Length: 89
Ligand SMILES: [Zn+2]
Image 1: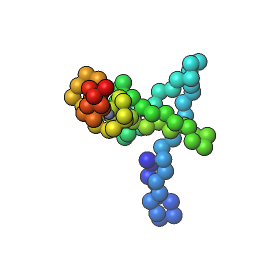
Image 2 (image 1 turned 135 degrees about the vertical axis):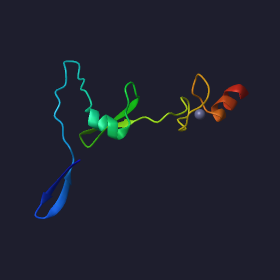
Image 3 (image 1 turned 180 degrees about the vertical axis):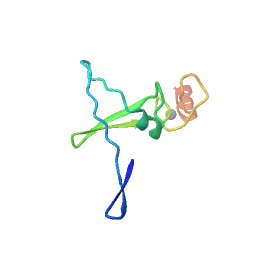
Image 4 (image 1 turned 90 degrees about the horizontal axis):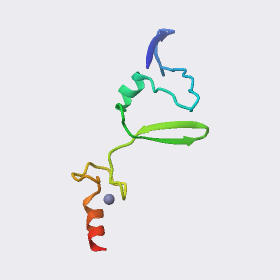
């Protein structure tokens, strides 16, 4: 955000960056946005398109099977419910 005073009022506007995609369609996300959104190096992100705009969101850790958010203490990152269902098969 950039703040400035206009007609005696403080106005905030979104910082905008212009980037050029490389020949493979890649861009570098501005460090300011990565810091603000908590998107660290090697983070997983969800990319969606809506109304002609591309939305990039930090992907929260979640169960790889059902999508329940959380950090699970196993190598597969699978929730207890899914582990129980797999064992019952
Ligand atoms: Zn699960």
